[in-house]
Length: 252
Image (spheres, rainbow, N blue to C red):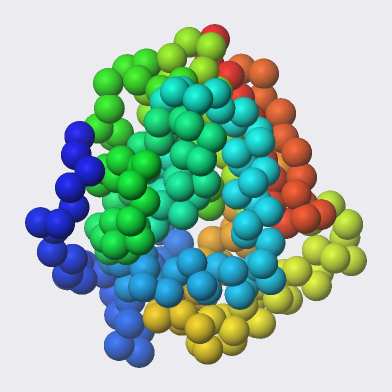
């Protein structure tokens, strides 16, 4: 485990497919494709997220921190940490935060941002580079749906969490009010890629991201997946009318 990413050279994966000179992934979610896509969007990732979410992303990060309820000194894994913006938010209360991601481009942007209270580690969600029972809490925000095997990722998160430790998954979900759901899906498939063309370093990636949100299970179905992975006391809470949901679980 290391926080030194200065030796890493980021390059586009040979098996990622190209569209209009930029890379995006397919819904098959081949790891190399997804990693290459996130490498490409890394330079303007945080700005694009804030614009596309109409500033709601800050509130979602606060909700994750509140749900984790971390005490000073507790050790927490932020999986799919990206540029470590979410990790830094968790570290402000004194928790010891490890941010893990498989996109080296994202981690390099996070390192340049100077998040000194966060240890950055390159790793695969399906085979985490940590010992059993290593963390008091684990979390993943907007990353579970990008793994090739979400069930395996949830099992790996369980493995590295100590007994009594907790999980928080923050992910896009299904708006609970049907008329709003229709408007939201229209925004995802039409407006989101159009806005991304103005602010993102790789607009094509946001076509994939919109498709992946649309294909993702709703709240109750995801709760079932979390339970089947071995987590107990699973519950969820809707944010922003169900656009996003927080799922919580405990390792017994």
